Structure formats: C-alpha cells, structure tokens
Image (tube, rainbow, N blue to C red):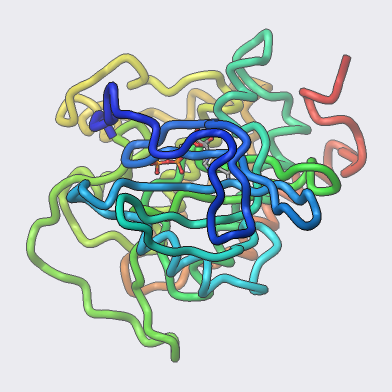
Length: 304
Ligand code: ADP
C-alpha cells in the first residue's frame, strides 16, 4: 500500500518458461510487491496467473500467499486453484488460476458508480462465503476490499474469488484453537479505506475485522462511495469512521436495508467470538427473496 514498486524492471518476458511447463504470455498486473503474468500450460493450453516477487526485495509476501493457497486446496470454491510455487535465483513465484475483472474495476465501469441491489446482494453473499471459507481453515485475510475479489474465467465467470493473501495471518491452529492475541501494538498494514477501527488502533485483528471491511465495502458498492474516500491521513479516516452515521445511508433505496443490522452485530463481536456467518448471509439472502431476485438474472456488467 502506497509502497508500489516504481520503474522496476519486468522480472519475466513473453516466451519465458517456468518449471519447464508454463510459458509466459504477457504481464497483466503490478501489485504492491510483485508482478503478475498470464501464462499457459504448454501441454493443454490451460491459462494461469503467475505472481512473482524479486528475491532481493525485503518484504516477501509470496510465502504466505503460497501457504494459504496450498492449505485451501479443495476446501473452497471461492479460492483460486494452486498449481505450484518455486524459487529461481532472482525471483520467487506462485502459479494459480487466472482471474477476470475485480469488483473495484467493475464498479468503476458502471455509469452510476454503484451496483444495482440485485447485483450487490448476490456479490455480497459470495464474498461472505469466501471470507467464511478462509476463516474456517484458520486464516484471516486482513485486506478485504473490492479489488481483492475477482470473477473467474470461462465457466466460473459468475463466481467471485477472494485473492491476494500477502497480509493473511493464521489465527487458529489446525485443531481450531485460537492463537492468543498479541498485545503489542501492530503497525498498520492493509488498506486504510476499508480498515476496521481495530486496525486503525493497531490491535490484533480477528475474524470480525475482515467483516468490518466487508461492511464498508458493501456501503461503497451500493451507495457509490464512502464518506472518507478523499481523506488520506489515517487519523482523519479513523475519526470519520468513528462519526460514521450509517443509518442515513439506509434511507436511500439503493443501499439494502438488510445491511443495517450488520454494524450493531459486528460491534458485539471480539477476537474470541466466532462470527455467525449464517446470520449475515441469511440477511442478504432474505433481501434477495423479498425482492424476488433470481440468481440467474443478468449481473450489471452482463446487461447490454
Ligand atoms: P499485491 O498483493 O502485490 O498488491 P495483487 O495480488 O493485488 O498484488 O495483484 C496485483 C494485480 O494483479 C491486480 O491488479 C490483480 O487484479 C492482478 N491479479 C492478481 N492475481 C491475479 C490472478 N490470479 N489472475 C488475474 N489477475 C490477477
């Protein structure tokens, strides 16, 4: 965040071959700490995304990403397939399924700047399920935001995937026992716009903090913006969140009133309490039933 590598050289070029099996097609993105390329499996022509980070770079995040993708293998339909990872002399890499447009880009491409209630509720249900599946395996995402959810490709083009696990953290061991929260103040990591107040205060983050980010995200994609969207300083954003009068947003037809109880519910949670995901998903599904939203109707970007 704010740390984007500038003017760095491309680590790979079209035609380069990874693991003797994958051929690089082109660069498709630059992240905070690395580069993303589209690649093809030479035998079958199947597409994939290769995320690389320079081995000279201090902040190595790919290790955590690879760990999450590996642990999530076969556990969630909302997480990319993991095809492998490795180290070369100059860079580390992971190979995963290629994704399509992300929610932030899709929102910005709408005429109004916000999604219809039908699209937003359907996206919301999928995002909550994705977050829950990550938590179920013992990981927090810690950077939930619209640009970290993307549509799949081909037959998965209506399914959302959660990605970018560079800031993830294991909060529970494999038997589901919680790690004790650290009481030292943690430096801020993540994205200020969607950060929970706990994250602003440098506290150990828990499952509810991913859900706070989800709550802010939902207001943004249904209302069109968040009140602190043009603020830059962390302190000012934090104060805007403390003063946030969310109720006034629900007077507008376009912000689904089913989101209204989320805030009070999230306020009742702490690090130790497992959120009731079914309750939150149920609220959104109730909203869909009440509005007679059919799962197969076109999503906003599928309309002509
Ligand atoms: P960082 O964690 O370094 O910020 P991201 O994971 O957010 O990197 O990715 C950077 C860019 O690459 C983003 O624009 C994102 O849309 C794109 N990207 C990341 N993963 C994939 C993927 N699996 N398929 C397609 N594009 C991807």
